[in-house]
Length: 298
Image (cartoon, rainbow, N blue to C red; front, side):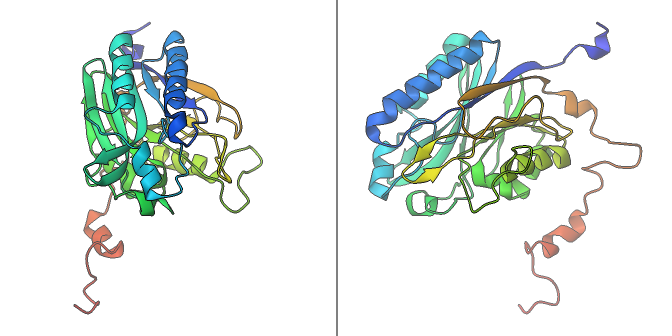
């Protein structure tokens, strides 16, 4: 193998798709299942493991009090501590979603854990539907975290519908975006002829237009009358899935062998086009409503 083909940051990514169950009586079993599947991923050589949104609690809370009962703190939560111990003991990086309690506020949060402990923490910025009744919108912005295997950004579910989120993460140099999801069934059509859902295409598009890898972990199953879409995937910098897109029904683990830093050395698609250089930031603020157009009343 020539020096030019040796990966700079070789990483085996594993995306875990499974069905956690809501109810405080299920928290321990949800956690155990997440760790069992993570153990399986380590056995297959994975060193970056991505679990879904709210992986330890299930999703469909019925009251804010119930959501609060499921939540734990970042500092001493039993699930976060168990995931941290797993990452330390296996010398891997693990991303997981949990319901975070901070004082009386609740957040739909994600953690990035590694052999060194907590490396990153994100609170979901865009809340979907009844999430607005339980959670406070995230207040941490869209940070990218430096790790020994590359720069990792986090987003959660509905965030991917807002193109600013993956763009901001990519502009900060993210080598991979870990997307933690509870994609729900919405009015049909849900899937196209290839079995992909709209969230699959949004993930692929975000990877393509930002020249970044995206590892999207969704859940499956039924919960209190709702269903979840599955369709987890790992998209390459070209946008296309690396390997298969998961089914809508089955527990599974998807793998991809990536050089996380590869996009840094090839940001230009051709001699005349470059995603970062070609941006018209002088026009976007007003056009997107970030600033008032001169013709608008003040």
